[in-house]
Structures are given as C-alpha cells and as structure tokens.
Amino acid sequence: MSVTTQALQSFQNIDNARHRTLITALVQKLHDYINEVQLTEDEWLHAIQFLTKTGQLCHEQRQEYILLSDVLGISMLVDQINHQKNEIQTPSTVFGPFFIENMPIRQFADSIVIEGEEQTIPLLITGQIRNEYGEAISNAYIDVWQTADNGMYSGQDDMQQIDNLRGVFISQLNGSYAIKSILPVSYQIPSDGTVGQLLNYAKRTFWRPAHIHFKIAAEGYQPLVTHLFLENDDYLNNDAVFGVKDRLIVSYQFKKLDEESKVLYGLDRDYYLITYDFVLSAE
Ligand code: BEZ
Ligand code: FE
Picture 1: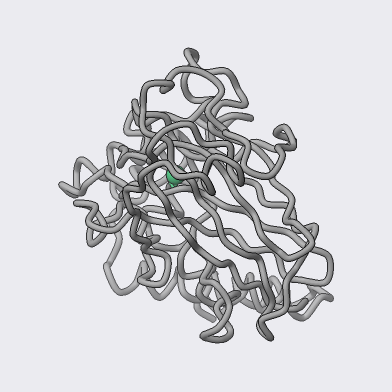
Picture 2: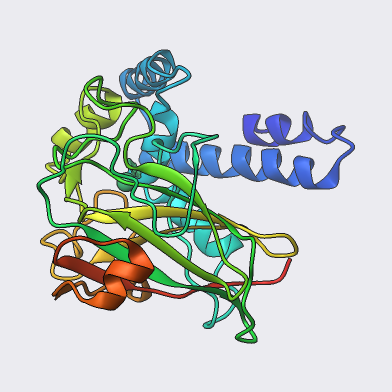
C-alpha cells in the first residue's frame, strides 16, 4: 500500500464528514504536489523553516500567516467562494491585519482625524446603507479605518493615537451615513518578515492602492467587509494582495464649501467628496 493511501486511511475515523473531507483532500493534494515537483529534502527543510519562522513572527498585533494568505491570493479566493452571491450586493474584499475592535462610536459626519493632518483638505464620505430591495437599513454599525498620510495605520505607528483614523458610525433612520476624514494614500504592506522575503525573492510589489476599510454589520444581514479604492491610483492593477474589484473603485470630487455642506456636515473648508451606497444581503 502506498504511503499516500496509508496516510489517507489514517484519517477515516474522523466522525465529522466535512472535517474528514478537509483533511483528506489536503493530504491528497500535498502528496500530489510533492510527487509532481519531486520535492528534494533540502527544499522540504527550507519550507519547514519558512513556516516555522512565519509562526514565530505572529503575536497579538501581527499575523504573518494572514499576510501570507493575502499575498498568495488565498484570502481573496476564500472571499470569492463565500461572498459575492449576486450582482446587487456590494462586493467584499480582503480584511487585512490592521482592524482594531471597539473603536469609539462617532456621530453622523464626525471626523475620524484625531490628530495631525489638520491642514489637509477634508474628505467627506457619504451615502446610504440599504438592502437588495433598495430599502434603507438603519442602525447599521459601520467600522471604518484607514492609513494616515505616512501610509501607516494607528497600532502600527507609535506616533498615532490608537483611535486616529478609525471609528464606528451608525446609520440613520433613512440609512444615511456621513464620515469626515482625509484622502487615503497608497502604502506598502509589512516587508520585514517572511512574507517580505518571499515578495522580494519574487520581485513583487509591496504596494496597495489607496483605500478606506469598512466593516458593516446590521441585524438580519450578512456582515460586509470591504474597501473603497480611489480612482486613478497607480497600484489599482497591481495590488500586492489582489483585493481590487471594479465596483469598489470610486471617484472623489473637489467641492467648494457651500451652505449645505456647512450645516449638514459641519464642514468649514473646501473639501473632497465621495458618495457611495453600500448594499447588504439578507442573512
Ligand atoms: C490592508 O489593507 O490593511 C492589508 C490587507 C492585506 C495585507 C496587508 C494589509
Ligand atoms: Fe489597508
């Protein structure tokens, strides 16, 4: 009996059928791969050392394995299989490693700029949260996070207060939301670990196109994890983690301050505007 057959048979006592399929299919594919490439002992040892080092880099604030999954396109493949069931709902994309839970609740049109960047032209992001039938969803929790001008997230950067450029907004009765911020910038994903070694070796880019992250949750609806990407970014066609989807690319317009923007959104200067409606799917 071949070692592959023996290894497969050794997992037949797992009671849960789905778990049995997951592990036996994995063993089968790994054995097929090793046969196909005729893996040498040196290559096998190198792979073990790479995975060991990747694990050693992981801690509460750093998940090198998620980053590895992202740059291998696995995160987006899992996303594709599990979401995007129709053309109406807003597409989801990669979660990334920089989300922080329990950020402050903000009011309609509050700014998430807590420190610095005061001289920058503000960005207003506004629109509606609704369902696939066009009905407004009120009380949706909209978690938002983005990088500062230096391309770093709070939590990554000791110079930023932890709630800088982060916050949770709650949609109004008519589903509307409004967030004041600044334009995000393109930035490079962490390069100082095993994933960095891999990307350098493959002569790949570390860049992600400028984007703002959203995690939207409402009772009775599937949570949505997504980004809005800025149009015309240099890296839209070359995202290190393959996260760009056409329907998530938005335009931003320069607007002169007028009475409505002063009164409705508390703006005091000319500003950039992004309007975007998020469509959630029922659970
Ligand atoms: C992010 O957009 O925050 C991100 C996503 C995947 C890998 C690294 C960063
Ligand atoms: Fe990001």
